[in-house]
Amino acid sequence: RQAGLKRIVIKLNEGFSGEGNALFSLEGLADVAPGSASSAKRAAAIRNALPQLRFQCDTETWESFEHKIGELGAIAEAIEQCQQTLAGDIPQAGILVAAIDFDHASILKYVRQVYPDLILVGGTSVGEMSSTMGFQEDSLSLMLFCSDEVTFSAGMGRGVSKDTAAAATAAIETATTTHQHAVSDIKLCYTLCEGLAVDGADLVTSLRHATGQRVPIFGGLTGDDYRFEHTYPFFGTD
Image 1 (cartoon, one colour):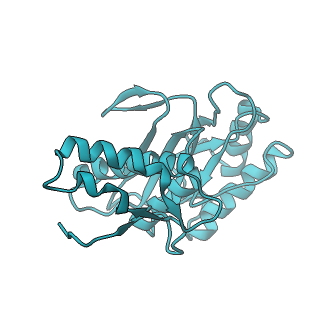
Image 2 (tube, rainbow, N blue to C red):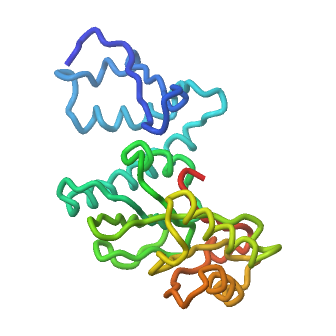
């Protein structure tokens, strides 16, 4: 719409530093400008020119940038679906499950930008399920919780493969201390843990001991699409 426009900035909404910015030059697209070519030809020319983007971050590449566009589009779509269901209510907690190849740090930052106070946990998976999309692979699922009667808290324990009991105790203590709850207040425990070097049965036993009562426990171990290399639990933006 602006005939004299020479370039535009494309920004990935994943931070405030400007490193997600890319500069797209329009100087080579004069032949497909409005009035000179059809919208289909113009769209094709733009797609072909996108690999020539200039990036604010010196280490960024078109391949990486293109992948991030798809990832952030996926989480934006998931958040939009959740917001439609929430109908204006603000969620207190969420669970994010995502395929191993996503840029998880960028996705977690995006969720935090939309919901700064959200208690968020989750992890990488082999497949994702939701009532909206059924079973999917190479995707992500986001579940948000909102209640006037239930309170949520989360904690993390490190070094679980070396000392499962200590990590479980640390997670429970963090969850209760940070959010000013007593251990006796816990009514349900959801857990996700690194999936390659941890005994799930040992983890459940340790969590039962840490809670000091028979609290219902459910969850799982994170996955990496059967590569058996590394898996990632999520906690906040970590």
